[in-house]
Structures are given as C-alpha cells and as structure tokens.
Length: 395
Image 1 (cartoon, rainbow, N blue to C red):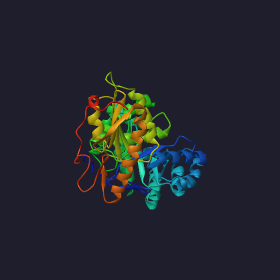
Image 2 (cartoon, helix red, strand yellow):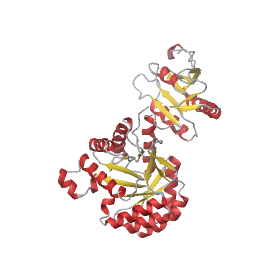
Image 3 (cartoon, rainbow, N blue to C red):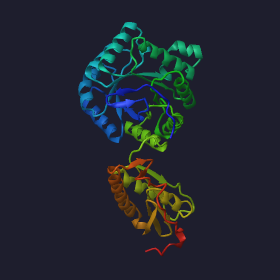
C-alpha cells in the first residue's frame, strides 16, 4: 500500500527489522528488572498482546544480573536499555540479550565505544541509538537554540559514525521528540541521510487522553510515507495499552493483518437502538475470540448501515426492533435486537472457520479479505440491499 523506504536489514533475535520486513511493535517494562518474576510476567503479557520485542531498564548491576533468565524465558527478544555505563552494557551482552539501546554519545571514552561495538558484533547483537529531545547534548542545544529536528538528526548521524568507524553496522536509530511536528520533521530528515532502520516514537506522549492522538498522528504520518521499521507507542499507562495501540495504528494503515478490524458508526439521531452499548458488547465478545484477519461492522441505521455492513466480512445494520445480518456480502436475515450480538458472534465463528480452511488451501488473506482463486470481497457476488424499513415484521 505504501512504498517503504529502503533500509539495511538487521535482526533482533529472531525478529527482522528493516530491509522490507514487516513493521515490528515493541514496548518497555515498568517493573524493576531485578525482580525477575514480575518482569517476566509483564514481558509475557506484552508478548501475548502482540509485542514483537520488549525492552527492560538496566540502570543497576542487579538488573544486569537478572538478564540471563529474562532473556532465556521471555519468549520474545529482550533489549537492554543502557545509559552511560560500559560495564552494564558488557554485562548485558554477556547475559544473552538480543539487543541494546544506548546512546554512544553518553560514553565519552572512544575505547569504551569500541569495546561495546566489538562485543556486540561478535555476538550478533544490534544496537539502537536512542536520540531523545530531553537528553540531547548541551552543545547541540546551544548550537540550535533548542532541541530542533536538525539537532536530533545531527546527533544521530554523529553517533552512527561512532559505531560504524569500528565496523559495526547492525544499527537502528530513533530521534524522538515530544513535539509531534518536530518529531515528524526529524524522522523525515534522517530518512534522507542514512539507510539505517528507523525506530519510530513520540517520546513522553503523555496519558492515553493525549498520547493516543499524538502517537497516532506522528507514527501514522511517517508510516503512510513509507518511513519506519519498528515502532513503540509511549504512554503514561500500562505498557500493554502501548502494544494494543501500536497494533491498531498498523492495522488502520493496512500494515498489519492480525485478528479483527472493527467498524462501528458514531451514532446519531437516526439510530434505532443504543449503538454505543451494542458496539461495546460486540467488541468485548469478539476480543475474547481467536479470529483470523477479518472485518466486523456494527451499524445503527438504514442510511450507511446496510452498505457498510454488507461490505464487511460480517456485519449488522440495526433498524426498528430488529437488524439485518450480513455475512460475506450476503444478507443472512433479520434478527431481533435482543439476539443481534449472539447472531453476529455465531456467524463470526462460521466465517472464521471458513477463512482458516481456505487459507490452508492456499488462500491469501489481506486487508481483512480472504481471496481464493481470484475471488474475494471485491469480486464476490453481493446480494442487493433490502432497505431496513422494507424488511419483514420484527419477530
């Protein structure tokens, strides 16, 4: 759908980043890393929700000592977050982590940079250079007057050079800013000056109320331009919410096929039932189901409802006292309001089974549509729509 920026390919454990690979999602634990049990519980929760890799903080020696078991039992690649300390970086590498996040500019001794680069290269461990507006070198802030996009990019390019001069090329970079336009400009500028894979993020985006909007705009804009190879949504919230939002951003752009795409109308005075309650109940039910990529629509009236519901894999368009159930472009029948959710779930289970069976026979699932031998949502026969008000009497 979007022409991806061409980058070098690196691997974080078994996860490919860059080189045209699928865009990966990551988050960071909020536990104290030296508490192995709590950290592993959170790592597993993030992985279950769709995190492809997880970062853990390593500010102390006790955290580094906990890394061997976390890296071994995490179930996803573990990235050690290091600042300043070459000793902790070396301990993390020896512990078997799958990636490092560090800022070479914080390691002033060239000997230390070489030491880390050589050890990481020997173990096949990539390094993310994490440039952040809040911790930019003071000289760059003085040069540009503030943490501008240009300042972030200059820092990133300099720190890339520190590693590359030692023959280390398994690098990814982030240039995060809390100001969304500045963040977008920084990544756009950096994308023109290096082939290093880019880790996207709006730093310190805030609570979900604001952070969701900032992240969706910042990440979504760049991804739509083909910029970005891995993402982290930063929220002042449970990190599981970061992963969920990251998935939604990718799915909304057609960049990830995973589970269901839920379409629901915003409701208005035309609605013949409580659309908010209906959509919430449907979403709560289908979230508990293991569904293949498919689109589910819940619509509240006869204006856009039938068309939207019919175009989804499964949909309902509500009318007075009843609703019209659609499945794969066909009208299944009229259902009383009190049976709408159950009927939709039953049909979802049937369609999910059909999609899985078809996929096993060489079908291709893309954008919520299963295509078999040239057929699919765009090419299948669609029943003419019966207007809501012209259906049979309710019941």
